[in-house]
Each structure stands twice: as structure tokens, then as C-alpha cells.
Length: 367
Image 1 (cartoon, helix red, strand yellow):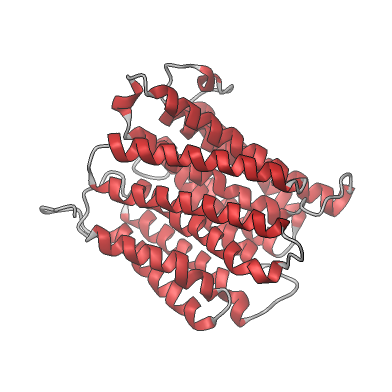
Image 2: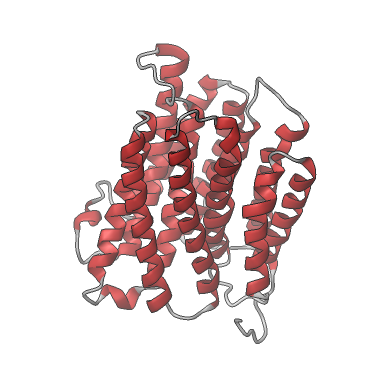
């Protein structure tokens, strides 16, 4: 990725995090800064990086640039609740994502059902499909809630569906993880990889359905299935992936993902308990979200952005430790206390700028 794109995405990611904390300083009942925060990171930054990575070109194509511009319009129109613009733009974004997906793979995702197809490629196509479907579904929710009122459900809100934009980033990171297990593709262990693929992709969809219908017991079963699938991925990756610098960051990312599964299970149990008070568990929910968004997903996006640069000159354990401190401690506390928000922004700025702009020349010893 060229330097201009690195500057653009690093600024946008830091800006996204800042919007995540604005509510602490400037409370606003009419506008959800959290919504803008998620859109800027997941859709504008993450979605554009996903399409750029899929095309594999040095410079961003016109299609990718158009998606980026459209995603910004989408994010701010949804934030300001100018929904007619959001809906129109969403169809453009859907077409652009599908154009790139079909060019890379095919119109129908038949590769999912072919045993000889790389599991990494299956995750890659699933991430693109998830992005395009998520864009359309969010627009249908807007049409239903703002205009037609066909369905009335407490969880059928845009604030629920915007979280779905993190799924494509999760799947493309898993694609990166499995791309480093090519030797396993030729062994009998591949069946475990296939099981992980179907458990994770279908599990996320089913889990989202149970969230909409507020079915807590099924959510627990699906979350446990996802937990075991992710743990299996960690075992395969730790055991079989080549010991290169990217492995340190992606291993940390998988541990972030396991952490989100554990906090997700804990949060569901809290919801099921008598006298449940959402205000008392907001800290756990924010910890869960930050670990997923700025922990697991950031690991994948940073590796994609520096894909051709590794090894890069930095002290991996220091960056990883700072990453965990910021994602698990500073950022969740920053939602409640202004000074922690400042520290979280400083911490993430350090992490993003270090990962994006550390040099890649000279001898490097991966510790």
C-alpha cells in the first residue's frame, strides 16, 4: 500500500476513535456519535481496505475510490438521519462491492462447496458477500423503520445492524490467518479448517438472528460453538503457521477474538439474570466491542495495509502490549471518563502510526 493511502486510512481510523468518545464531552440526544464512529472504522476504512486488498493493485482503482467516497456520504447521511441519501448511496455501494467480488470470484459463490478450494479464499469471498449483504440489509431496516413499518421489533434498528459491518473485517482477517496454513490444506487436517469455516460463517449469521429475536439460550449455544471454532483456529495457527513477524500480530488478534467470545458469553448471562440492569453492564459491552473492533479487526487491517512490507522494524511485544492495554483498559474506560479517552486516543495513534509507518529496511529480529 502506498504512503498516501496509509496516511488516509490512519487519519480516518484515529478520527473514528475520536468520534467514539465525543459523547463523553458533548452529550447529544439527537445524534449517535457511536454510529458514526462504527461507520468510519468498519465501512469507510475497513470496507475500502477490503476492496483494495481484493483487487491487489498498487494504486486504488476508480471502483475503490468511488466506494470510499460513497461510504463517507453513507456514514454522514446516516449520522445526520438524512435517510433518502443513505438508501440511494447504499445501492451504489452494493453494486461496487459485488462488481469486485464477481471479478475476483464468480457471481454464485459455488467455491464454498468445493473441497479443493482454499479455505482462505472461502473466507475472503465470504467477507465480500457479508459486506454487500450487510449494506442492503441496513437499508431495508431504514426503509422499514422510517417509512413502511412492516415489522416492529425492539432489536430491528440501524444501531443493531451497523455492528454487522464488523463481520466482513473479521472474515478477511481469518482469510489472512488461513492463508498462512497452506501446508495444512494438503493434509487430512483440512477437514478441521472446513468445519471452522462453516461454524464461524453460519454461526455469526444464526447468532445475529437470535439477537434480533432476543433468544438468549440459543445465543449461548451458538457463542460456545463459535468459541470452540476460534480456539481451534488458534491451535492450528499457532502449531502450523510459519514463524514470521505477521504471526505475532495475528496470534494476538486471535486471542482478542477469543476474548470477545468469552465477554460475549458473560454478557448474555448477565442479560438472563433477574433484575438485569443494562447500565451496570455497559462496561462489559464496551470492552467486548473495543476488543473486537480495535483489537481483532485492527490486527487484520494493519497486516493487510503492510502486507508487502514485512518484516517491519518495530519491537513486536511492546506494540502488542500497548495494543492490549489500550483496547481492554483505556478505551472502555474512555467511554465513561474523559481523561481515559484522551489516553486511549494517544495509545491508538501510537499503535496505528507505528504499524503503518515503521520502516521495513535493514535486519530485523522478531522477538
